[in-house]
Amino acid sequence: MESILLLAHTEADGTLAKPALEALTAALALGGELTVGLVGGAVESAANLAAAAGARRILAVRGEPFTQPRYATDAAAAEALARAAGAAIVLAPATARCARALPGVAYRLGGRIDTHATGLAVRDGVPAVTRWFYRQRMEAVLTRTARPWVVLIDPGCFAPWSEAVAGAAQVEFVPVEAPQSRTTVTGIQAPKADEQTIRPDAKLLFVAGAGWTKKQPDGAVHVAEAQQLILGALRGAQASLGGSKSLVDLSGEGQAVLPFMTHLNQVGQTGSTPRHPKGLSTCCHGEEPHVVGWRFVNERRAVNLDPNCGWARGKADVVYVADAFAVVRELNRLLG
Amino acid sequence: MSITFQIVVCGSIVPDPLQTLEPVTGQAAPALKNEMMLPAVLDPWAAHALYEAAHLAQAQPGSKVWLVSMGPKAKLQQVMMTVAQKVPFELVALDGPASGFTDSFATAAALAGAIEAIPGLDKSRLLLFGGWESASRGAGSTIQMIGERLGITEQFQGVDRIAVREDGGFEVLERIEGGRHQVSVCAAPPAALGWATGFLPEPRNNPQVGMANMRTVMPALQRAKAATAADAGLRFASVSLPKQQRETRIEKNMAPEEIAREIVAWIREE
Image 1 (cartoon, helix red, strand yellow):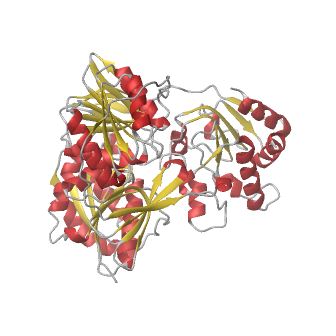
Image 2 (cartoon, one colour):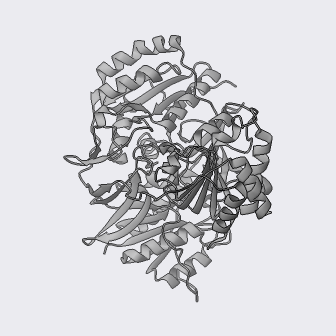
Image 3 (cartoon, helix red, strand yellow):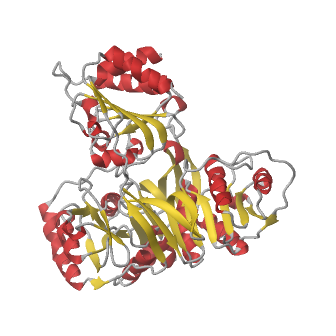
């Protein structure tokens, strides 16, 4: 098997986050000689972990300029580590930071890149990447002859590496002069903790469709109640909120509907493809462009008034033909 | 201080999201069954990039927008009939593949070449826009490689907003994990921005904009050079549709209380 470099950014405390530990599992499963390349302000904990996992070499780029998630510095660090390692296969977790910088690094190295890998295995003696095309509509297995081959592993596809770590690792620090950059990272914008509706680690994805904002049997719309019910369900089930494009677009057009629903919540063809063990769809027709975003949601249930909706045609395990307002009201009572 | 930008938007065409897609084995790479017959649209995230570019150009008088698009010429022409009615731009067309099975490295090379050839392009004022991922290949790697080829090392991905500052710099909001945004300030162009959805609604069709655009769209299509995006080292071992078809249980006569109890039990199952 060819040599492998695993690239990862360390957290502020010098450890590796879950996506990096998952990528480490993927790298170990390939079986080649493993080098781990770390970037961050502190790297000791991560280096010790990499040594315990069996990495032959541990390289690191350390320093204040490389703590900011920024293309110019991240690319420079990754390029230096890849050149120092000289590995044929470069693996990294598909975090926002790696996804931003590593395609440019692949170009600088004269290599190729594949992103959103959901599987990685040796086939006929060479690595083969599994990934989806056309927004999760078809799955392909591909190989490449070009090297280095950079592969970004999607989170949630491998179990995070978790074994006991003992001893101190020997780290080779790679000197990198921070490139001139006109970009300064000034902060993070996040909803307040009690307004956070996107929870990537939640066991349940709760999807709200446009039906919540339509006229109900009494001939009136009940947006305020819909808002209260949806937020109640999110709190009660500690669920992550997803939306269909039609509902999210209504919010974007400035209409007074579900103010907490933004494009970040959108699931589907032009939205996200989150990974949750279970998903509950409410007031959503289950059209194909939305349902492709459910590709990695294992168990699916839907509440819809239409027994012929998309969910009923083999896309959900259970469809409850019922009024979502009544069901979620009761659901919140039970979860409360 | 008013700053003018030269905004180049890269965006190709993809099958209409409502179409059923089926892979077939092509000569060198997989393809879609009846690909040339499928109705196409401008790639959704690239379309958002185009609308954001037009909005920015309008706010910064003197700025200009180009749309650089690679696809089969006939399909490009069909799609441009609609896109041209949305916002003002000048088209740079490449007659090449728009398949999801082409390689981003080769695609970036073709697009960067087309951008380099735009007459009078001032790279010091260049903003390179595109979708952060396409709805076909979904790689999220093309814009970065075009940027590298053009010497642009200020790059942002998953962008939802750009706000120009008084000092000529601009603030950028990028999507990061957990439904959050990273906020950065870039002191000056050139920069590359891969757009997510942004916050702008899709512009309404404007026949006057359409007529103005079509004066340059048709000649651009006629001038479109043939381009390839092949990578001899890329081999697809298999391409398949997901086989899982669920046996859906449809419950028509359960009371809301009963449904809620069943859902709660299901949520709490390990």
